[in-house]
Image 1 (cartoon, rainbow, N blue to C red):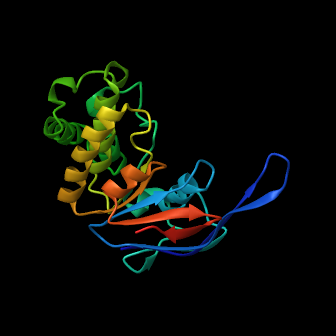
Image 2: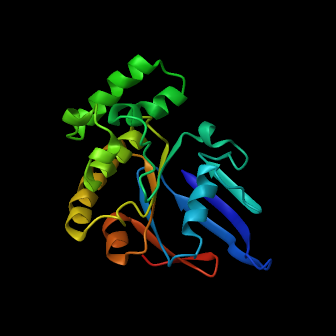
Length: 219
């Protein structure tokens, strides 16, 4: 289970003023459950995900996973996966090497990582695109590649930052159903950030809104 305890983060404006972005924020995400986080742009949603992932330091508070304090643990040791809204795929790598990247980073031999990547891509209906460059794929296909890359490392926690914001409404709906099925099959804990309340209610067993640096329960 992910636990956030009294997370506080300050942000310095371009003019030098200090703003409290997150204040004494608490959250629990049980294993196998998806928690949806709502809030407008600039409310601190993406910053909170980066703190959980270890990409940004908190000014106060603790991040725990399965009762272990991981507040100062490097990102690569947390075994979490973070999907950005712009996919963050590598344009210089083909599709299979994008998916294999996390396994190689964990120390697997590239040849073995590629075999696993191809198997994962086949599960996602992308077996015919393993040698393609990511910029040759449609937006929906790129999003599937990003999810395949996130899941292949068997992360303990999946963090999704506006995963469908760049897609049209019909594709968002179909991919959301696919993502939910794959996430449910994995049994992992998920934090899903979105500004779309309809999406949030369709994905989250719990839902919170980020207001004035804290979380307000919506359901």
